[in-house]
Length: 130
Image 1 (cartoon, rainbow, N blue to C red):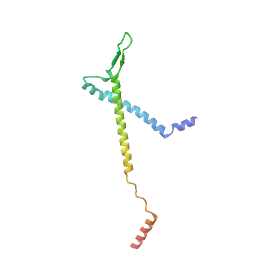
Image 2 (cartoon, helix red, strand yellow):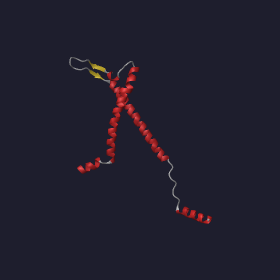
Image 3 (cartoon, helix red, strand yellow):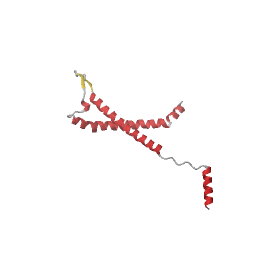
């Protein structure tokens, strides 16, 4: 069973998937920082100095040591923007890949090699010229 598991793990598709998941996680972190630190501050400033992570609907006020119960819709909005940026970048990557594949398909193929008859006729022609 250990040998079978080792074969399964060492397949190319599994390794490619593992690399994609790791790079995807790192990319998500970059996009999250981009949205939180670059995009949201100007949007918040344009909306009158609103910080999206502070936007929340209070469902129950804090009582004593019990914290308030809130619905943090600002963080949700920020997460949606993260998702839209990631989806758009993936769309661009797939679009570029498809365009590259289409160019490969459209590239003219090498002409087929001449048949034996054509080769013989060419040799006869050359001999008659001499």
